[in-house]
Length: 601
Image (cartoon, rainbow, N blue to C red; front, side, top):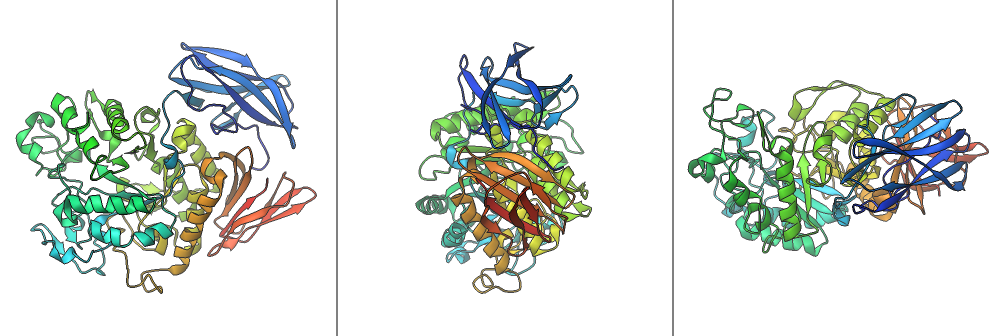
């Protein structure tokens, strides 16, 4: 796939106002290559269930292209639209998947909503995940008693990769240890830290909470979280934690005292409903009115408590959000999301709400509940499939990741991106790896391909997201084995468990992300996709940035752009891709794996 196509996306270059009010109208723009041959351009939208066509007017010319504009009346909370392009005796649709030569459903239409977007700081922010038990032990960590459930481990012991046993392996990392290493995090250009749960629980992962009323004393307790939050904010770093709205632990006080908060019926060998039949994770029943009060509604709820002083968290990531409130005939998921969002906006209008959903999340991502999602299906899985070039176990899902080519990568990214509003796309967490997945270094097999993966995450719309230790090339064949401790003794000069060259790549990409506005706020236009290499533009009204990524050597291509490209980032562990001006345009070439980022306009 080479060559320019008609293009539209939800960025400011094409959409006058991304958050209009009902009754307003929004000017939409579309760009058409000069040689496309259109005789008319129409905007198709749906009003009260009936399609409407508005003829677009010419709105200027650019180098080798024509622009058209049309007004979209905002008649619904969510307004779907696509473009009709008449060429000769036929016509094409332009929707979120691209130019289509056959009739289509409305599923991949572009969308504008009246819902507020994620806070501006969160759109394009760099996210760093920390599993507290494995990040660092503070100077006071020895004062925390070893719990009865734990199997103590020395800091440099290998993490256990066997489910069940892995949850009991205890290293004793705490919140004070994170605070003592904030300089490491800040140097990576991190905008926000995401902590897995901090509530007390009989496991190292703490997803089986025994209480939501206080922070686990093993992590330093309430005071330690308040101190970490204050110190992170002093460095300009936001801080999140994890909340399980789908379940609690079986040792939770509610499980003993609030029977109506749970489902009591035979299920997978239990006499109550546990998450996928896990006895330790009883599922919450959102048909219980008092559960809403305790958990999500109002200033006295769990949701609001930790956004307020002294903790002042900046948001929540909701564990298995797609399963929350869903059981047999019950489906409260989106209602729960809206209530959490309303409570958060009351407590802190700048707070961020992220869902965990591993699959097709389109029906949960209108934008009135979750601001955005952990983008496993719309980013991580396609990226892994392209770079791993093998069948690879997919951590949490226990399925296989097939090998895919560059054209399939682009098609998958478009497929999932087309089903959500752009304001959601711009805040999605684009995951390189997490505590639930294999490590990226293990998946792709080389430091050079780690750089390609990181470069894609740091240049793609949304938020680049990586798990503490990815920046140093830590290993792990599944989610449990990936929960390695940070090798602080090796980090200053490099050592057996730490690759300083990979760390340098993450530092440089973090600087690039902050220095280059189009990478945070620009639109996305794919310009070529070959089996082993892909290229795309990130554009604003003032700048155009070209990104080229290759997993292996490829033949190269010529793009129809003029001017002198200014290099912003060249491969360091991968090869530097080249971009050379010629009479015919920009000649892109390079060995592989390769990375290149240039400003070209």
